[in-house]
Image (cartoon, rainbow, N blue to C red):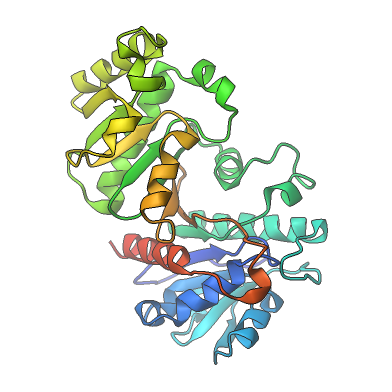
Length: 331
């Protein structure tokens, strides 16, 4: 067993899992760390993987990059990919994910997450193919839910941001027909508070002004188009306001993004606001999980298997994820 607790680190490390080796995770990681904005931070980035996962990307991208195998975070070097080796990676072909590597992918994720917790640090995750993992873990729906269960978190929030627009999502990977039954006062309040404190903790926004969306068109139009706003959302906003939070709404999703007076938006379901965020800036958007016992930041894209073999992927999301994590660890 590796013993990787930090003994005397000035800056906490960021632990990285790359997701599926047959996707673009290895590519965008190598491209990101070659960017000048990250070169000075290599000793603060610890990759949890197998050398074979990134060796192909290093070769294909024709970069000179040393790999430094470590067994302790204090062995990290400033000019290398500092790597904690995970055995079990099977041969893979870019663009063709295979079930054979599902256990390896989860082992990398679990180990990196455990290390983030042990070191009071953070985790950056690359994309994985959910359909592949579902063959290994029944009912697997994504990183967010997996990490919530693994660390027995009371509640977590999927929080998306491109640095300018901040978006919390009340319900994540549930069918749209289920959303009205899932929405409750406690759920909205818990998600709101996670978003509120995340904005303060990560982006230093004091007493953020948050818009809470309705669930129905035009936020229900005072009960003429559904009653969730009047029965659930409005009473929750009143409770939050009485507790001192700058909660506003319910506001219609078709107008909220034309306004600039809010620091963040709390949407009721996954596709209510995410298309807007991604349309504004798809490449620099990141996915942050709030409510875990450590910070988790992820790229906001999939494995992109259709372009994986071309090495043409944009690496901005991985770059932003790593920069956010490093800045948070140094705060």
